[in-house]
Image (cartoon, rainbow, N blue to C red; front, side):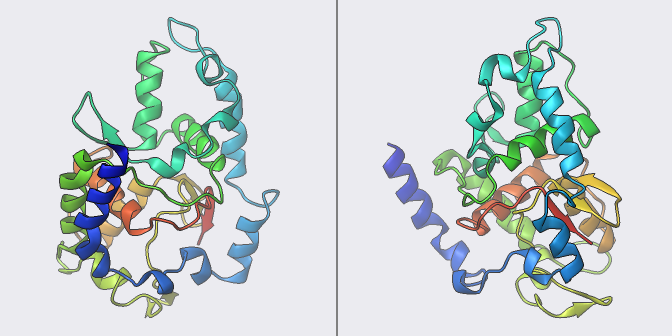
Length: 255
C-alpha cells in the first residue's frame, strides 16, 4: 500500500512538478544570500537561531500540564526524531487534513501532556520546532506519499499560482519566473522552505514559514490568512513537494 501510494503521488504530481523550476536548476535560498549572512548560518556559534534551539532543549526535558510529562517522557532523546521535520506537513486523521510540525507539537502538548497549547509563533513553540528541525539538518525534504494529501497539495499549487492583492502578483511570478533578478535592491530567491524556522535580521528574531508567507501576502497588499489557516498549511504542503529532495538546513539565517 505504501509503495502504491508513492507511485500514485508521483504520477499525479508529474504535471505539477514539470511546471516548476527544473530539478537541476533548483537552488537553496542560502545561495542568494550575501557572504556575511551565509557565514552566520554555517557557524552554529554565530547563528542566532541556536538560542531558540537551546531553549527548546530545556523545554524538551520539562514536565508540563496535568500529566507532568515532558517530551522526553515519550520520545526519549530528541535525536530519536531525526527525519521527522522532513515529513511535515503530513495528513492528520482527526482533522482529515494536513497539519504542520508546529501544530503537531501542540497536538502532543494537548493530548499527551494535558497542557494548554502554545500560541502559534510563540517563543516556546518556535524553540521546540527549531530543536526538532535541527535533528533533520542535511536530510532531504520528503513529503509523505499519502494519497489523502493530493487534494490539499493541489489547492496549495493553485494558491501558489493565484494572483493576489492590489499588486495582482502570485508566488510563481516571483519565485519561478523571476528568481535571480533584483527587486528593491535584493535578489529574488526561489522560495524553497528548507530553512524554517529561520532567524531573519529584519525580524531580529526567529519566525516560522507561515510568518514569512504572511509577510509576502502583505507585500502584495493582500489580506493575510491568520496563522494556522488551512490555506497556509496547504501552501506549506505544496512548497514541501516543490522542494522534495533538497537538504533541510534549519534553523536558517536570512536578511
